Length: 398
Image 1 (tube, rainbow, N blue to C red):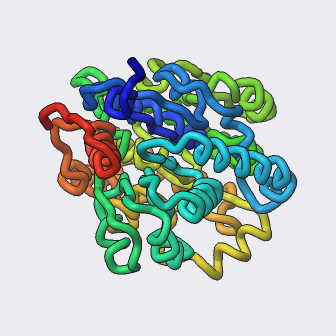
Image 2 (cartoon, rainbow, N blue to C red; image 1 turned 30 degrees about the horizontal axis):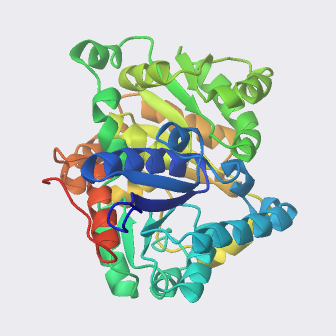
């Protein structure tokens, strides 16, 4: 006897365009497999993490990764081919739900084309674009082709309500699932107060970030080291180790480079301070209770565009979540070696600046509304509810 529609697996098509999206997608896939009583089949585009969760990627996720205007232009023909290929795959075998993760420039185009060709496919966007930093019009622009938005940050549902964005549910940041790994034991907390402070060096996870920040980071650390002995640790990814080793080779003082996740989290739990590229890592450091100096430099063209479009007083994610500019940030022409070194020295020492950061970080648990249910599980509930609108889906108890 042929299988009926009710007998077939729940079909979920996912698209992730960068490493952070791959991590989100993998956790979501695992949560969906557990929460839906029937079987679930996955298709789409993702990386190694989603592959371990059961996705056979349509093409390498790296084909979609391009940062900066120049990088996007140079890879535009390939990206456009992949866009066409992705939309055709969705339409050829329509899923019960389409989940688009991060990478807004690519995934929003996928959503718009799929919606125009087959309006019956429910579309979930996982991770809000930063409409609260720049290009706020993107919120309302999403509404025609995104049925539901899953937000990582607690203030984002209200932002989208005000801006006319799609229905939005705050599910929580994936870092909240790793608090146990980020926060120190009594012994590790004591290490933060040791005479030889452990200082994290975090020049970014993208080649352009590392090459643009590396020289300034190296000379700033050398300047601080003249008056303050430090145990420097630089956590990075295995695929970036060669670039990192090349970047730090001329530094007068060199950090220990660690590449495993266990080594990274141990360093976070013991660190007294950090020098970091502005990005998600600032929130990771804040949740770990590590005061920092955040820095960033982009290309001239991106900077000119950004100055006209940026909203608010800070681009540091930790500051945005806390609602106060507690983390010092040095951007573009304000990023100089003397200023960077002075800010880091003040962050290591017992100063009012350091105390202000720690006070801000202490509010994060209340701001995030931390509870026992993981963000990936909350996200799975929303995805399953949307899929259920098209056909019955059995849910386990919340």
